[in-house]
Image (tube, rainbow, N blue to C red; front, side):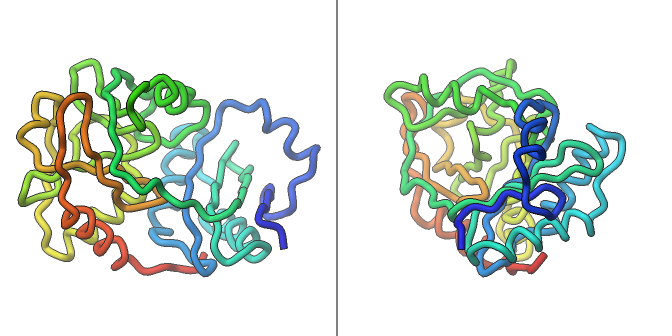
Amino acid sequence: MSDFVVQRNGRPATVEDLAPLAFAGYAHFTAMQVRGRRIRGLDLHLDRLRSASAEMFGRPVPDEAVLACLRAAVKDGPEDVSLTATVYSDDDVLVRTRPAASPPAGPLALTAVEYERVLPEFKHVGEVAKTYYPRRADGFDDVAFVDRRGHFTEASIWNLAFWDGSAVVWPDAPMLKGTTMNILRRRLDRLGVPQRSRVVTPADLPSLRGAVVMNSWTPGVAVSRIDDVELRTPESFVKLLHDAYEEEPLVAP
């Protein structure tokens, strides 16, 4: 059984299927980790695809059509995979699986870069910045983005979360609200963990007690510093996020 599956609209993709998509720069996607052929936050992934399609194409692909594509892909591959579903039109879905992802061990050192994504609330293709800036981040593991006002938004392929000693702090800025971030927000709420959304700037970093990055790979990798500001991110904060994430059930598509 292959570690890789590529399907277009629920069927194995041919060269003829893929050739026009290779040059298509107008699309959006969602990325997820499949474990035991099940997915955390499946409703959030469907919400993401639905809202982005409505904005970019005028109407969404029906949820059942997306679910059929997901079922076909996970049925034909290993139980644990990384899966990306990319939508090219209101009736064209490409699903790719590859071996399950492992996050970096961390902690990570980030450098702040001024950059603002176009349509930041959507996860769309063609974003060269998320590769370009990390490659130029000499002496750092990755980058954190700040907007023109100097407000932290997100990181290259991650969401950011901070810890002020008593509450999880989410940056209040135009950004992509990731599925892992949204899983954590609802699980932390159910656990009674305080959360705040507020503007966070580089000047605020010394007053914070820690930071993490998160994406579909992981609910939290500790950040050790941003530029020259040391962040002694406590292990208890990282564990809190991982424990909350584990509360989210895995659901079959």
